[in-house]
Image 1: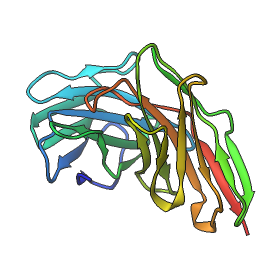
Image 2: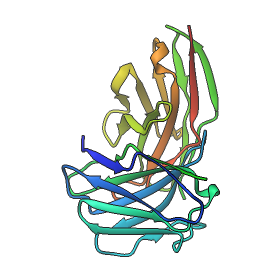
Image 3: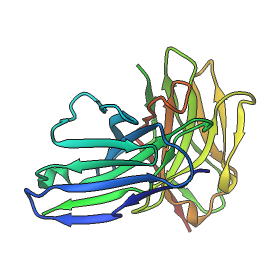
Image 4: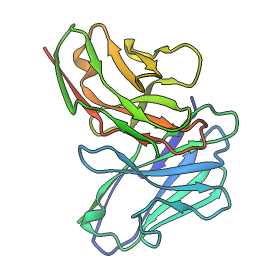
Length: 115
Length: 114
């Protein structure tokens, strides 16, 4: 299957700072990228969907000004958590879809802890 | 709208015993179905998927699942579990292509008892 990387794998930051998480496709062109959030011992909740070169589509209840998504190229999408607060602490996972791919491929996740 | 139900939030089972993790879905269109496993503090790993064709799907680590359209189910089975199978298991559904969003079930925590 395809290889997806996320960076950083874990990050600790102070409340009020912004954090950028990268999601990269290493071996295929990802025309669509998805960002998920997972709270401890909970399931994954889709936050937003982005297509390369277009604005992201956010799920209901997700603040687009708080979670900025940039899908600037076919191999890179970034999620920026702006002015992070402790309640933003979570596990963030991206997944990628592209031509000739039967299914999406998930990244290994980024664990964010806001103090 | 699609949804996924995993009725069992926790399943304890003795080592070498068989296990079945239940999954039911609802959708108004044809679907793709998936089972993912998540080990503690790790990302998701695809166990198996149903896209079309044979309703019995075999995956990695000795797992298999059967798609039952009439019962809208996709239960996961393994004939003999190992300690290393202890993990969280998620059933998921999407509406037909890799470009469609994937909806996850709430997860089932499988605990294998030595």
